[in-house]
Image 1 (cartoon, rainbow, N blue to C red):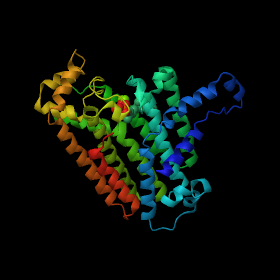
Image 2: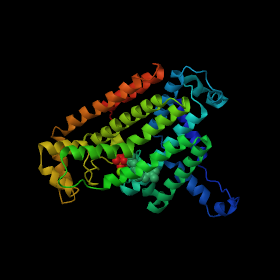
Image 3: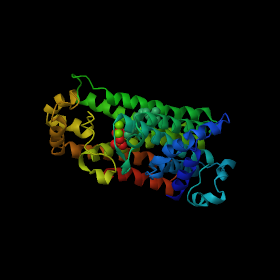
Image 4: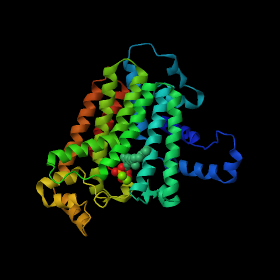
Length: 354
Ligand code: FPP
Ligand code: MG
Ligand code: MG
């Protein structure tokens, strides 16, 4: 955990607004720099799980020690005095460290935008950015974090990595759009589940998958098999993670989660537990098609779902994706401490409590 804490400080340093044109005084006079600085730091200060950087750093380390080549010069960039903790635990190059930072920054920017879209008032146990500063500034704060992430990405200087990481942002937007659309009334249960998994890939798993792929590319640029295995690990872990999140929306409390629960139905969203419950209780399909908007729909649907086999079937689906991630991590060329951690992370999604 020490290396990701260090990373949190590095990210906050990168988020201090500076004026490239040199007209800092005007920005300072208007309190722009201090206000924006405070807002961009807000979610990072609350200490998130830093799961995305953890996964990409572990993947980077697993790939680095798997390749039999001698360690390139850039790998040695990390052991500088204030990062000695990192170097004792991990052998990652500076650019792999940057991928972790970028992943967390894209994730946080997407949460800032997401809380506006979902009209959420809490995040990580505190008031959300939009609850404190309003929607307009929140959208700009998210954009600012993305802009800074883009600067760091460009400093890596590798077009293929830039392209892979940029595809995450495209997927986030497409995932949100998919989530806002309702599947056609004549769709089969299998088609609905397929669309839900595709949406889940875009809105959540793509970030894990593409960060893992980037870490692998930076480790061994011409090993396409390694890149694909890393990507598939991230994709399967990411889908298991979001499935667990969707399940917890039904079975956890807002105290445990630090954000609203029982929220998805009210937002009109039919996640895995609901889709499975539709097989047992076809009346849910009508509610799903009207996005649970009729008075009493959300409450009635929740009651049905928590008492259906949708809960257990969702757990089984989490297991399926977790096991696939374990398979991918196990098929990395070498087993070491990092691959063990990747396996543990995948297995922990089945009984995640928050
Ligand atoms: C949280 O999901 C949100 C996401 C995983 C992605 C949100 C993506 C966007 C808003 C697209 C635009 C983003 C960028 C960076 C341009 P959730 O609402 O299901 O979970 P929650 O309970 O944590 O809010
Ligand atoms: Mg959302
Ligand atoms: Mg949300």
